[in-house]
Length: 133
Length: 138
Picture 1 (tube, each protein chain N blue to C red):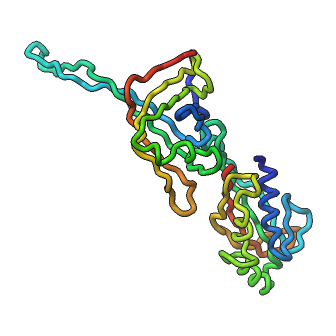
Picture 2: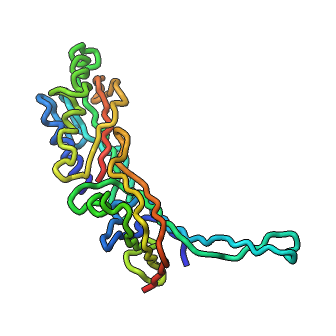
């Protein structure tokens, strides 16, 4: 169980969403819709003998230019609890990430807002993913 | 001599190491107080130690996987005596600075179903000890 394997597993699950470009590192250029998987924080020593660590990831999905109506509609689809474009459903489709972690949960979508990339404003949503490994 | 932060005490139950599913372990040894107050006690109560007893408290992470905690500590064990070995000071083997304590305990409860939606499944137990608690340093 490594951070890289968890990140890769989350990315693999996200790639089941048709048309969504997924990056495991922050890309130099963004071509929406695009998802970026970032490690947010780690809690060590949750059990004896290294039995459990908690890794929290932030998945940021950039859906399009901030002013585009279609971008807002796309964000609605990604935010749905279920469905073919649901970020939550995609990430939780394989909760052990094929052995990269013991379990995971998409806890919330705490932020929706604009993000500036290369001087362009994009609409983006953030999801919090907690991985137990 | 050194104080220590708990990161990895060792816990085994009936010979199986379950440390990786334990988040907290505590062994408490107490004695009863026997009142021996008399007219010569100068207005204060006097007590002496009576029978000793103990308890083992453990916080678990549920795990039904192969060899996981819930395959070792099953509901079938409730009402039976089990043997718990605790090794302190983040040790993995009994030694002078990582003594082990062995206790027979009455497994009086388990919680095979535990947890709220979205939470890690955990449960806690407090087992009373039965008989002598032994300490080993080697």
